Image (cartoon, rainbow, N blue to C red):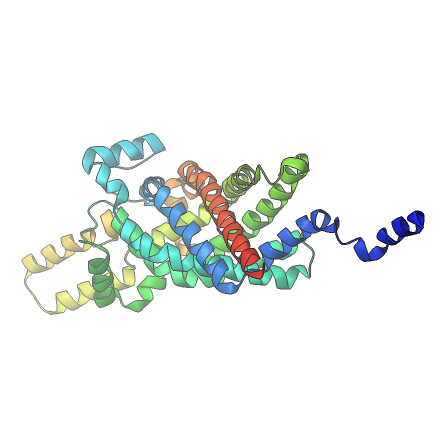
Length: 359
């Protein structure tokens, strides 16, 4: 009878008791990928804001290096660019335009990560190792988020440049609207998408692959080292993607920091028709040169990408297309590390919150 009783207590009815530890990793993955849409948005918004605010000075140096033309001081290296900014304008210049970044980064990254997560779930069909799904999802995310971020990015880059003449974010927005129209805010949208599409394709696929590889090295301590894994994978992905897409970033900066030549020529022609005085014409002509972009940067015959590339190559050679690649990598490697670790921490927070509610 004792034997029978023991056998009865070992019936399958009692087997669920030891199962929770075996199922724990499965629950974690499901909770991470099963967050609500608004939770992805909040985690992404916080991550994007923290990333861009922390790395803003590096972004300012990069913008100065990429803005070609007859500026008072032509930046040729990271050190030279930084010294030029500090000497002529002081440390505060490194944070000029940060208000525009603050207004744009949060909403843009909310869209960025939430769209990525939704698309990743749709395209991967339950396969977490599908690199193509990660790449396609990244492209979808950047097309959506750039529509939100591009206008503020344009304002931010104009404020970052020396002698821009703008008094602040709202002053820049009003002046651009009145003198150049709404289209000026999206002058670089096509270039931005063309740049960010391969950037995010490389970035997300590299991040997911690196994260998987790093967690596979020591799976028994993966949970304890999750922050280090996310930061390392993010830094590697950000550095590689930044190096690959530098030429498009140079073109984007040129389009955002310059007035279109057609706009300038229209203004000048209108002014010339209003006066026949040779002195007035000479004065207008001289002022026209000062209007050729912010900080005297080159103007282009059209707003096409090919025209900008030809102008850069003619002026500075093919090396001009790689201008600012070092600060760009210096920006994106730690920025991606900060962003991904913050984002994954946010997801973990909501995972725990959802688990406690269900419990």
